[in-house]
Image 1 (cartoon, rainbow, N blue to C red):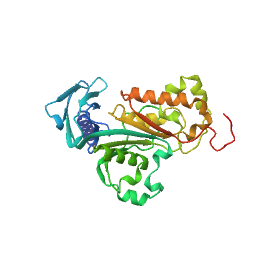
Image 2: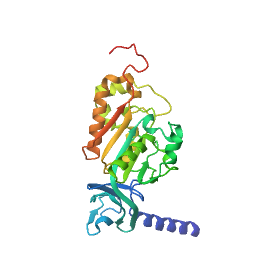
Image 3: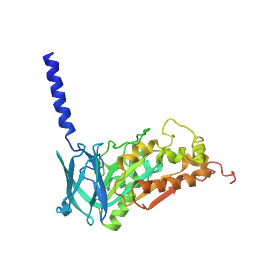
Image 4: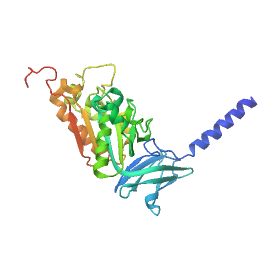
Length: 306
């Protein structure tokens, strides 16, 4: 009995200590890139009603103070300077988190299906030479794993890594080439949030209610061919792979998708417009949105008429 009581007390002490900690989602971590010359969102968790201070070392006199709400969540707006770094960010409440090697630059989200997901390890033209020369420490990559969910998630298992011949092999080759071009042309750090899943229809990448509450889009989504290798239910990739980084400060989005929607090409224009508009609303920015649509509506049947 005494042994069980001691275990219970230790558990209670651990739970109390854990409860007192300030937490950040994984998108805020060492090696991250924040959007330059902007007011960017930073958020996390603390004790309900606890005050949290946020200080970026690019302007240590500008301290932001925010109070956690009754759900123990807090969110603040942090002003960033011109591109540069490395900097630190201190998040101070009942405990302190220091984010190190933080850069200010251009941050883009890279999403879609297999052509966006395709990595050097999958095999691309001149891939070995390109990967071997991919030594760009000021390009940082946050690669979100392929996870779907029925409900919007507040975090994901990922972390920021510098771009090197070893790290670049397992992420989107297209995102890397895009980021490298930005880095070379603008001479600023670049952050790439990679969130892609091969084969997915567009329906899975926006909020579920935007599809199911529209009779035309709901009917079309029911015609998507099911496969065991990727989700097809509206909202599930959005919940697991986009929601965890909303409303992270972005410069824009690139998108490469379309093949899985060829059977419902008549409503794709409406669906895709809703996706773009909803992402702009979610991230609270009029994001530039560059896209490639990879298949005609008569994909695989050149004789089919409009």
